[in-house]
Length: 382
Image (cartoon, rainbow, N blue to C red; front, side, top):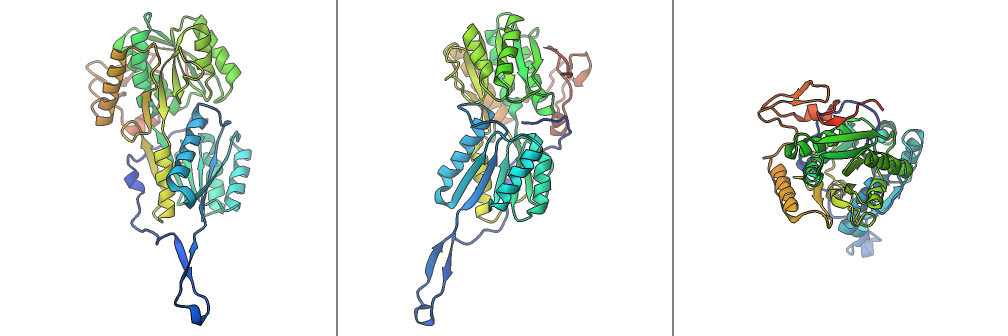
């Protein structure tokens, strides 16, 4: 999650960029007693690595924070007694975040993950005072010797979701509830629109900004407004399942984000764009345990297993499922790039060329995205 409009550098594209060359010895030590018993070494189990997680919203049954907490649980499952994890939920960005981070660092947590862009500056301040603690700022972009950053290419899943929305929206109208107009959100919104228009060049997306990441009542109200304006399929970039519940209530279709949300929208859900953090978190914790953790940037998507579409609902035709899975494999193979233009240039919704014909955006351009693509009915102003 992100909160401020800031430019981001391109992230590295492989876990290998983090791998160090030095490994620690096995996780135990030996002590010696008296001279008479010195020949009998006594193994002492190493204390578990304490790993902290800071969440911007409550842990619920689905959504952004739910997926990160599944990642935390995956660390525990993979590494067992070698780790001890703790999470602090619903932490506002700003002074409260810094207080929580200092408490975790002071209480012996040797690796701390934060899961919102607004935590980036507090992380950097606390990291300077605790150089022995390692930090991972998820969705951040500023690093330090003991601060790494990571994010996922959510836009890849959004493009696929747009294809599905176009196949199911007979009138070509979708609604989109979004938190803040920051690059990560704009990437997803624009990719969704490009995916729709790859199927239906006349597709339109009605946009409402929420000015919040997690506000279920307002998320629901925004969804209702969009449906009243004719949206046939809903998508969203917020933290709860309220949009899905609203679609279920009104008998419309919706695309889940972050998690499978069929528990609240069993009929409405077409598919889910799911985020998978367990592999990344486990690798980074293991790197600390083995003494090879390094600071760096990581930006992984479908190919890295961090983003996928699935959890298809009962109203998703099998032919469309097959189409999406084939397109997902094409993204993984590098044969399909959401922000690439064909014979015609891609324009923003003000008519300006943003991707020249036959060209594709590089990572630096994607990370600095500050426009709405043609087909989006809305502005960057909230």
